[in-house]
Image 1 (spheres, rainbow, N blue to C red):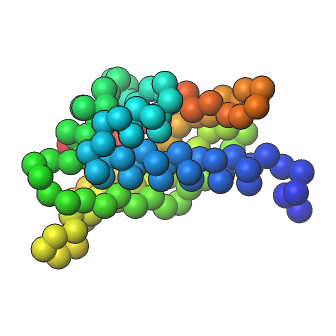
Image 2: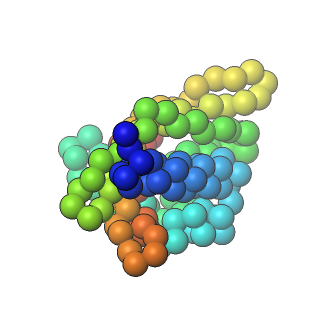
Length: 131
């Protein structure tokens, strides 16, 4: 049984963070994106495995091109303990919704939550290479 494990609670917390993050991203809501991140770094990984920091504007620009309406889904969320921290991985799909649904982009993401006195703090969110 998992009643004494923190992973189910952490999963719920991560799912809420990701919903707020990707929802703000879909709406091009810079303030919502900053609020969802609460100081966490957003990074992108290039083909060579090097990481580079993204501002909220760069994150929005990489996902949302022009004025198309998109919806971003996540799946395959996995969590594990990393000492006192929680690491997560998952898959995202970015869908154009009009005039008919079409997948524009898909990839993976991972990140880290650091434990605090009351709640976990989101420290980083990393995307695989974005176009």
